[in-house]
Each structure stands twice: as C-alpha cells, then as structure tokens.
Length: 68
Image (cartoon, rainbow, N blue to C red):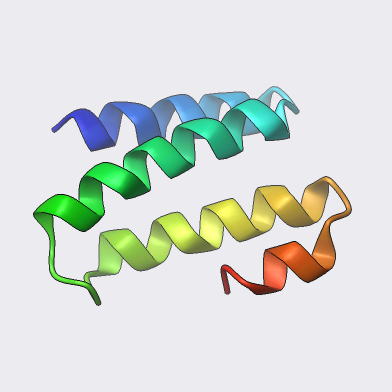
C-alpha cells in the first residue's frame, strides 16, 4: 500500500524535526487512504492525529484543532 510508504516517510521526517515535510507526507497518505478505506477507518483517523500533531509542533494550534 503506497499510503503506508507515505505514512512512514512522514514519521521519519517527524523524528528528524522536519514537521512541514512530515505534514506533506501525512497528507499524501491521507489522500490515498480516503480513496481506499471507509470514512471512519482507524488508519484515516490516525493520519488526522499525526497531521494535527505536526501542525501543533509548528505553533499553528488553531489550524491543528481542525484535524483533531
């Protein structure tokens, strides 16, 4: 699953402190997941949480709340 590859790239970028790049990969993963999985699937919810976390790390707390 290509979405999993993007997810892992996002996690690696997050661990390296590259939040903007992590968000990019998490959003790519989310886009693919929403095409393949039911709307309330656990993997989709996980992507939203990861995007929110990285957005919060950038100090964009109001934007992050939209993903929680």
